[in-house]
Each structure stands twice: as C-alpha cells, then as structure tokens.
Length: 294
Image 1 (cartoon, rainbow, N blue to C red):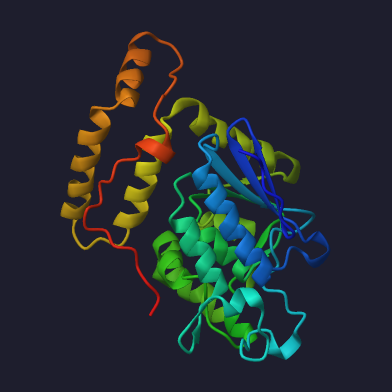
Image 2 (cartoon, one colour):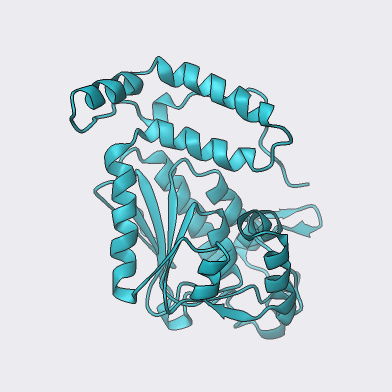
C-alpha cells in the first residue's frame, strides 16, 4: 500500500512500523484543523494496511506539539469567528465538535498499537492527543502542560475520560486546575509516561518496543486485545469482559493463528501468523454500538 502524502504530518512505513511525525517544526508542531484531519486520515491508513503492525507518533524538530496554533489571537477558540472547512464539516446542529476529541476518538478505535515518542514540549492538545495512545515514552527533556484553564477554556480531546484513568483523579485535577507546565520526570512518576530516555535514544527505544510486538505476536490477537482493554475501561461489571473474552477465545482458538502459535512454540521457531486484521478480525462485540455525537 503506497504511503500517502500530507501537509502537516509525515507518514512512513518500514518493516511493519508506521511512523507518524507531526511536521510543523517552525511552529513547534502546533495543532491546526488541517493537522486534525490529516491525523485522522493517517490512522485510517494504518488500520487499512495489513503491513502496519505498530504505529509510532512523534514530532519533528525540538517539540512534540506545543498545543493549538494561536495565530488567530483572541479568536483562536471562537469557532464562529475563526472557521475553517475542516471545522465546518464537523459541526453538528449548533455545536462545533472539538477537533482534538475527534483525533483521540479515532485513536481510541485504532486496530494497531500506538506508541507516543514524545521528543519535546507537549502542551494542551500536544499532551491530550497522547492519552488515547497505548504507551507513552518520552525524552528526559520533554515537558507537559494541561494549560486550558490558563487560556480561559476547559480540557478537551475527551481528556476528562482518559486522564483520570491513567493517573487518578487527584493528579488529573491538580494538573488541570493549575495549568502548570511540568517536567517529564513528574509525568513519569505519576504514571503518564512509561519510560524516560536521552533524546537520541528515544526513537530507537520506541522502535525496539514496536519490534517486540511486530515480530512476536499475531496481528489479529493484538487488535482484539486493544479493543478489550480500552473498551472495558468503561464497563460496569467484569461480566462484560467475560463475554468478550469467551467470544474471542472461541473465535481465535479455531483460527490458523492459534495453530501456528502453538506449533511454532513447540517447534521452537519464530511464528508466521497467517491471519490479517483486514479480513479475519472476529466480531466479539454483538451489542457494541458506535457512539454518535448529539
């Protein structure tokens, strides 16, 4: 599958790993409506491409993403005054959907694991877009900030759902109440970040983790696992997990992947899983309904 070309991001696939790079380095990769639409399109691409096993998201230059592009000044967040084609297309009735939320909801639905390689400052949407990613690795020079209250707005990108689940309500409230910018070390101590790395070691470490997944696991099993862990974060009873587990084991247990997984283990060789996410992903969610904005 040919790699698409974008204006605000770079997209590359090599040996099963897709790398999405936020690419406005002269603006510290500030988020725009165009970047929103291109990120959504990039995740559509990674889901559709069976050659993609893992997705890494990083930033060009010295920042990951410095937050929303503020070039419109005081009208930046006034969507009635500062409209774009991308924003207009996402209006529902009299409500303009939050672009950051559309990105995180798309990442939430990803069929491939997503690793954030946070190479520098990550503020506002620069940090909230990461919350729907599965694993966050950071340079020890990175900084984070949930700065919304300091800009006269509120947290976005569905972060009020994601953030407390990652770091707990107390930490989530402190970070959002104060809006302060804090170092990567604090993000690591509070559980937002999995590991810290020297700047030159960050991407190699992210790629090594991606390789661990891509080289040893069945793509369809990983896709199901991702759905199960994220969707069960909001379940009201473990029975919901048991229902999904049972349907999944029944479907996967009869698959060619399961036969290959057991056989390769017994034969002490590297597995070659034949099933594809695009064609062989079982539906273990008979009662799951996509949520609509209303």
